[in-house]
Image 1 (cartoon, helix red, strand yellow):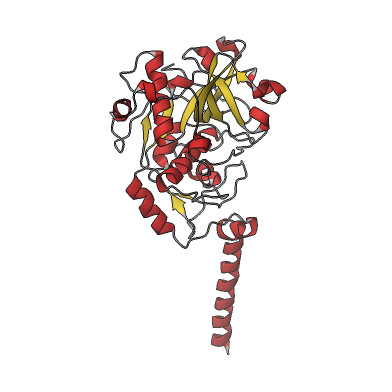
Image 2 (cartoon, rainbow, N blue to C red):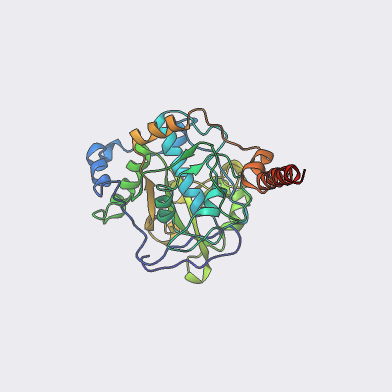
Length: 336
């Protein structure tokens, strides 16, 4: 898959995988992370099925909805950041108020480009989220890219750099799968790039989406585009292995219309290319604790009226009126 670039598809399917950028190991996480996990957790300790929601109840964020905006790469990245932050702190610090994906859509800049709703690269988004704290709650999500807002006194969170989940030394399919499984069961959900075939969106809205998705035809002519998702576990159904995927299209499909679905596990095209770009966000425990302390007492603003006041034009209008009043008062006193 190296060198393969996704074409943007209409609506919410939008993810780019540029040449030779499918795997990134950031300086904040050691290149030997996968190898270290393989020493700590041997193959016999990997269960046949796993669901992060069961291991860390209340610490895995809910299914979100990116709407008609190609921001899946920002959703997957920020969701992994939130999950791993809560796991590191052992508490649901986000509750019902997630990080502001709208802030990321408005403000994320990648090599001089502002991709917003036009798709982007997971590891680049994670790297940006490691040096640009994301506010919690506001601005509220609109699925439309707009001007990057100013800062407000709300909780802000950041990661400590992306890293590749699959070791460069893992050449076999079983080794690559084990790398992914160890990472998820020890550190939490990961993000991945998948190919979206032209039967997927129909499958998603059908009753079949409670079963395992396996593309009917993997010819390149049947590719709609790319998509970024969050992997929260794995399992097997009727002899078929699968990855447990949390999508960002709202609770509109998947198992019981929950927004979570089973993706056929294969290193070939039948697996939608899931092994080609699996990325995790490093969360340093001391950094997590420092961020929690810095955010103490700050309240997120999910309310649209407060959100508009802080991030919209209302505040500027009020300040403008105040300035005009002051200038008028000075002029009136001078005239008298």
